[in-house]
Image 1: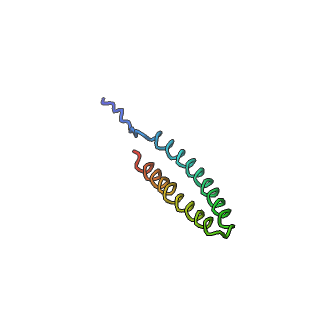
Image 2: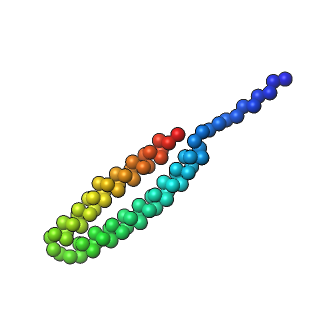
Image 3: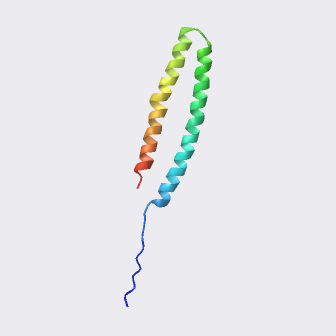
Length: 82
């Protein structure tokens, strides 16, 4: 008789699950950060002075340039994980 101990081994599954869970936590934290950034922007926009209006725009642009780009990168990295 032949005995086959065929086993399907999927490496990295635990790590991918952990990475996805951590990604969800990062996404929730980013949502809270975005909400705070928008509140800060609104505070600047309540003041009619041009310099504060400019700062509000710069805050939003900086957020988009740095945090949004970072989030896109993180999501793509987790998706690429084997």
